[in-house]
Image (cartoon, rainbow, N blue to C red; front, side, top):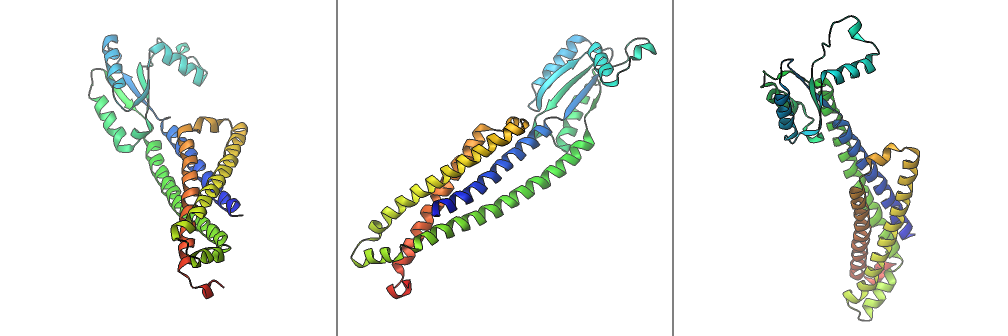
Length: 274
């Protein structure tokens, strides 16, 4: 029952951790969908454009970058709008451009303003710089509140989980209180009394963690089979780290609670055990 109780608590910790990791990955992917478009002057030379593209590629904020010539801009416009402006206009009025997606760490209002100002300095080459400023501003405040909420929930959940595991182990140790006291009365040292119980605590914590990890992994694979997008959010290294945390928490708290219970019963008088 002690193993089952600890496994249930670790299961809920793991599920919350998985949701937190997925939320973090989703927010990162959402940020990296922000695109900056640098419109180029009509008279810009191709070698200057190539040099400017390399300049942007050298910057740490650029994730992927693409040069869009006039024909590519025309094709994109016709695919999106479904009309052919050449029926009404002579030539192609669409400007050439360089488009790039940002890394998530740089999707911030002030950072984007600095990037825009830096790129706009080349007035002989750059006609204008555009990005979804309103979306970035709103995204920043919303994401900030979401992260604060998740952190608060994580702290509360961690405290409650530690208390629940501690109480579960202490309740299991309650049945051994007379055994502990009897060993003490016949001259056994504290280390001799604690050693087998600590070993049992480590084994129980490990088994409970493995049970919780197995169930969590099964649920993750089940959800990913129904929602394939979750596979894109999965970070295997972080998921392994989460499982290691569950193992450490299960063993650590079980060992700590067992040691605390043994010390408590060793200090109590025999009459108080009743």
